[in-house]
Image 1: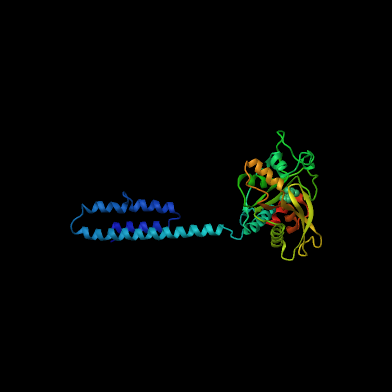
Image 2: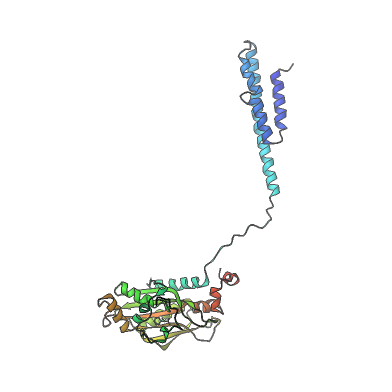
Length: 338
Ligand code: PHE
């Protein structure tokens, strides 16, 4: 004859192994092993049993408990594995993933970064100034008199209060010298603005790297060496670099620089990329006047300055046919530089 506890155990084991899901399994656990469960009830009942019965029932009770506990664990594990297998079966790992659109730097930013890196290797520090300027920083301090054509309204964007959008980054030469005595060795990358007729090579906004180097006995040879090194780092050691005499009010002598390189699409053509020259003594004098001292004594200090056209350099380097592409935000264009 089987003991009721054994029957209870067998019923529990059958129910547990047939449990279709975790909820049914948990219900079975509560029913048999929970505080008010039917197996647990036998512990209570033990107290009222006779001395002879106690060890027999005690043993059966322990067996029932451990068998049911083991069965619960086993079934639990089986259900968990089955659930995982189902989830995996529903997952199509051959589906394409959700693409993550990663941005990249604008080609002009890349060009400026390259340029800055080369000048930093030569010891140039970074300087900056505002896009919205006054006439003094943009013209007067740069030895450009009121009747100069650059100051006319058809060339320059004026604001109602007579301030203007700087027409070149040379303004930062003045701001740098106002702020600190010589020696100076800075570059100032940034935007410049002119009321040009917009076409494939002219844009109302363009970008320059301005350079200013003031020290004792700085000569045209230093200017030439610095800019030749820069351009050959950028375009390769075989690059032709040509200095043409030119005129700027704030430098004397002044030059324009052309480059040509067989490795470039432009091939045999000379392309103008830079204006430069030796800082005009009148610029030093005006800075002294503004500073109220004689820090920039033109008898003691000399310097060179340059303004590199960065849009032009980027167009040459990356073979870009139209300057307007830089500002149109066309992803088909921008993605080519990602
Ligand atoms: N500011 C001049 C321009 O924009 C370039 C230049 C800079 C020339 C410094 C000489 C010295 O054309």
